[in-house]
Length: 465
Image 1: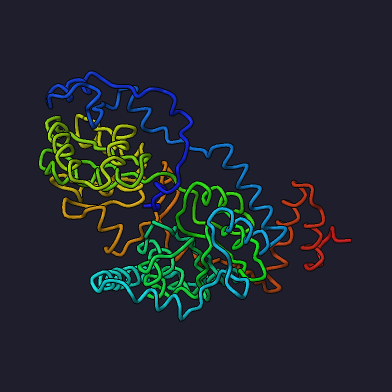
Image 2 (image 1 turned 90 degrees about the vertical axis):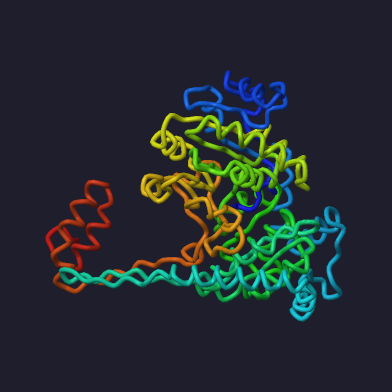
């Protein structure tokens, strides 16, 4: 999950269009004894106009958010700590400490983090160990090769300092701290700076377990800007990662180029491929696990069994009756949920590859057979026992994943996101002389004669001044 940009409330540019309901939608409502308006899942086929609408996940931020974020970022860039304080006092009602900084002393946040329930600490320790173990296998080696008197290398080095944004206040996302800070530390990042607008004890415990170095009680666009440009009290970082609301996401996009970022993420999404062997209650539970994130979440079922869609609809109704975040989940199902009925698993694979989901579950009789054919997913959960929620918390793979169709080209967060690569080029004399005419020929085509001369001069070739 690109957590939860449920937290980032985006505006779908095609939201004004009413959802298209096929005749199957009416049939499903009738089977369950509900009128059409009460149906929890639209039932579609790949040929329906409503299915094409599912693929359109273009998002943008409201103009007023972009304008306000731009003003805050520029203010922090020019006025530093004074601007950070002004916006934090105005928006979060929080003043800096006696030293003028929003930084929490290490002893303070360690003490607060140790005041969590024992079972939560055990769960965090279990998750941290798994995440660290998996990401330790992601190290990229330096490259050093030689040919024809030319030695080429690729040096892999960790970033020096990374900023981690963590939602605060009523939000408690310790799992996101583990998923972002641990890969950075495994990569060798010397300093991880966490900003959060009021950290929970669980978040601070996760920060200690993950190896976070410093914590600032800052949030919003001003925190992102402070990390990107640096102030007298907040150090400038090389990269900013982590979830946040629309203000945070807009600020990350605004400062990209000044620093690197992980992504500007959209709402969380799951696509479940299921056949007649699937357990309807399990499928419904996994759809709700995504739907409860945010009203913009995308819970999609793709099935070869028409009767499964009907059974899942019934299971959703039962489970919603006792789900604490039922109102949010119900809204997500109504806005973006669907059951896509296909003729075969081949067609299901095609649907999944076109949709390019953040999370892709395979609840079919032979799930491994499908894995090589599924080419555009952030994470694939193989078999009925691999719940997407396990990936969110304790499996060990990263839950920061591409959303909105970005799985066509983007990857899960990992150790590779916290390193930079430097090319190293070395020539001996013979190789330099041999390559000079080729360099000069290509430089002449591009109208860059100085490039050609720089090679010819070394080689003592004709054409050098």
